[in-house]
Picture 1: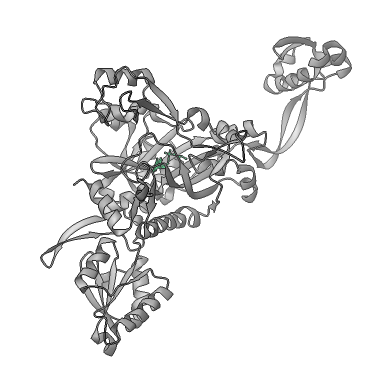
Picture 2 (picture 1 turned 120 degrees about the vertical axis):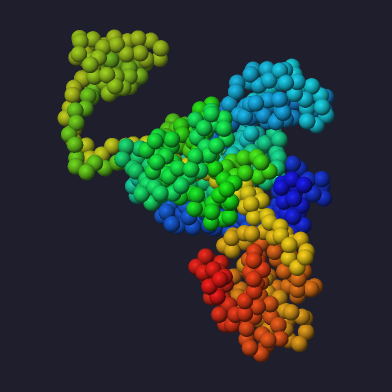
Amino acid sequence: MSEGDRLTELAKRRGFFIQTAGSYGGVAGFYTYGPEGAALKANIESAWRDRYVTREGNMEISAPTIMQEEVFEASGHLDGFDDMIIECPECGESHRADHLVEDDPDSTVEDAEALPIPDVEGLFEDHDITCPTCGWELAGEPVEEFNLMFETNIGPGSSDPGYLRPETAQGIFVEFPQLAEYARNQLPFGVAQIGRAYRNEISPRKALVRVREFTQAELEHFIDPETDEPPLWRVEDVVLPLYSAEQQDADDGGVQEITVAEAVEEGIIQSDWIAFYLGISKAYYERIGVDMDRFRYRQHLPGELAHYASDCWDAESEIDGDWIEITGFAYRGDYDLVKHEQYSGEEYSVFKQYDEPVTVEKPTVDPDMGYLGPEFGSAAGEIVTELERLAASDPDAFEGDEVTVEADGEAYTIPVEKTGFEIEEVTESGEHITPHVVEPSFGVGRMVYTVLAHAYETDEVDGEERTYLSLPPEAAPTTVGVFPLMDKDGLAERAKEVANQLREAGLEVTYDDSGAIGRRYRRQDEVGTPFCVTIDYDSLEEETVTVRERDTTAQKRLPIDELPGTLSALRDGDATFDEF
Ligand code: GAP
């Protein structure tokens, strides 16, 4: 059984995730988190919020998931957010053409998405690639672009198209003018969002890995590219497992273990900001339970970069021998803010105050409308605009007797004396700049899947095979299982009291009194509950309980009144089980 199949079986049986509406046959690419999965996901999100919002002093917002067409025209998603599709003429099934090429056993192509369509069509011919559903030969079938956005109509009728957001980021970018005000126009500042994103994936696969509705946790960090530096000193000694573009070209699969400081110094990571985020994120992945022996940061190859990105690294986890992108770290530059400024007509910049006011020479025009009006009629207004533009961009053009501008496709020559051209000295207190954006973008579902896969363990206890999830206590859906040894003699009542006392202390508690104690332990082991508390006859007499640790199955006797503090410290990583 593959790691993925094993996980899907456990996930369904124990309530981590199931295919949505299975009784109706289900639809590929939609999953519902069960009670254990929803709790695990919430813990991963709350650790993310703690790391990227609270501890970094960033803001968090919550935007709608549907926005109007203009937003996605501006962002480039309407035109460029496509995958390659090939349809089988025999069974009618559609497939991701680049994935079929990569999956073909004879193909050595690792990143077919970066290839032009004719090359991908050529590979179908060269390798006789067939339809995975019915086996039909797909050579000669057209490969086309397929836009991944889900379209809808806003209000009745179809005059106002809207789209379900394909990334949460756009909900942040469109609000930039307001957000900059909330940040008192002081760069750098970061805005985070955790929310749903939607992509009409051609071939959803591997359970939570490629789905059509998923949760992203994204941070958009707005910086002044001229002056803002990240606090690299905080992470300079962190060792990163890097798989750079150069290593990928060398094709040896090797990962280079190198500190953040060295990676920056050697130019392997081009952006200091990306290096900073790779540094702080490593501790986050460890905290939620990603196995660092099955983890790497992979640099994007030049053909692979998204339409907005200039330097990009992915955090990848290994499952079943495949590497899965769990986070994208992108330097988006000013792409998004410039586009939204162009399309909305609003200013998407911040006013940057100089330390001291500066005096600058500013070319200006003050055209003589008494001349321009009668001479050029309705074109006069446009000519004035072009003269202003020319004065700002090329003041030398006004050095002769005449100056020529183009307006509405026609050239107009104007005597310079009629333009009112002058170089004025002005004192400026600052300037408007468009910030650049650094973006760590996390897929929450892929992190849940990774954490579950990496936590899955088996061993032997009392001669029987045991399956357990070795989740970090902070991430585990339940922190404590509370069991009465037997459901009689007041043991159940006392156990319920203890369970309530622990809940009052803010711990996630499961009470279980059904079946043999060994079976109750196994149930909690399988959902990753790190500690179980058993109330026995001595508990009634001595006010102590047995506390069992999941991974080692070691047991200790602890006083009941110390349980809330002890278990909270164990959950928060402030103590280890050996200390008690
Ligand atoms: N704002 C940038 C952005 O959306 P992305 O690399 O397309 O970048 C970010 O997506 C993360 O979202 C990925 O690293 C991945 O973890 C997750 N993701 C993307 N598509 C997904 C899908 N179809 N199913 C599950 N997670 C997905």
